[in-house]
Image (cartoon, rainbow, N blue to C red):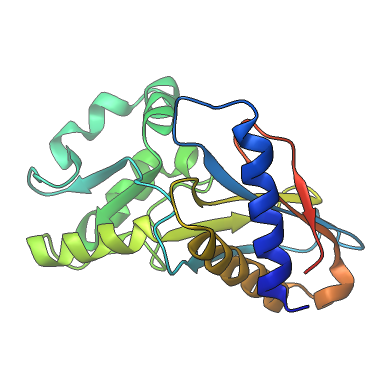
Length: 211
């Protein structure tokens, strides 16, 4: 039985279980990869994975030179408003992702880095820094962000949101396999680092899948 078929069976089972108690919101689909023989304190793991289908619409704010109609904007002259850590922490709770104009990055790092850095939300050259604020450039980055998940391993169990339940079964499977294989590729001992794989909805119990 192929990986796709095994995972598809798990998704169908998950939907069956979910219909027993209908939720009145569009649940997130989480892929859970439990690790073994992986020292989270010594082995750094921090990657971005682009999905074939949108995982979720992220709330984005930008450190920009001028106001944007596409994202909430914090301009350079407004940076002093966030001199207290508690004010930056409010931003962290409110927004999923931060982007920045490349010209402002030194100032952004000074003003926000001490708080955004440790939680992995600093605008990154990998995903989050724009060379200019032209609408086409901004739209392209936002689209990419909404198709991307970041995986940072801090404990032996990784939970990654890979989509919403209103995706088709096949789209969920495509996203799940994209994430699984990218993580597998970056693990030091590949398959030997994986204990098991499960999939769940926000309010459901995890379903184990043999992939």
